[in-house]
Image (cartoon, rainbow, N blue to C red; front, top):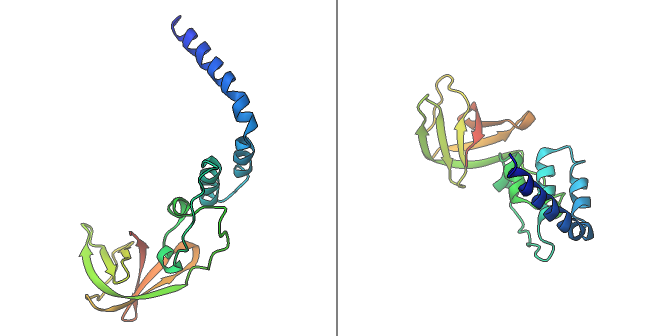
Length: 162
């Protein structure tokens, strides 16, 4: 127990020595500004932006809105800088592609790979869902972040895997 106190004292002195250097930087102000953000993904992106070194600012590449179709939350925050292009092109409400591969999970859910590289998985196994490689498929954006895969006038709820 007595050995812990010198270590705590040394750590306290180290923090006190570093404190003036941190006060010169406006890091604490930038972090405090991020705490007011209500959206989780935007708040995480704000923290990432605030903690990034000021000397190096990466140039954000323009991302095709269909690439982000079906991607949510922290995954988007990792891929975007909160300060740049806050109002990007709105995401499409639907995408159309052809089925290139079909797999089945252990519980019977279908995993569908599209020709645009996206992979979607059924959320629940329902009634018969006719699907073949080469079929035209449409992914529709629904309410509250839901998505439906539509093939041959039949639809099933899906989630984006990749």
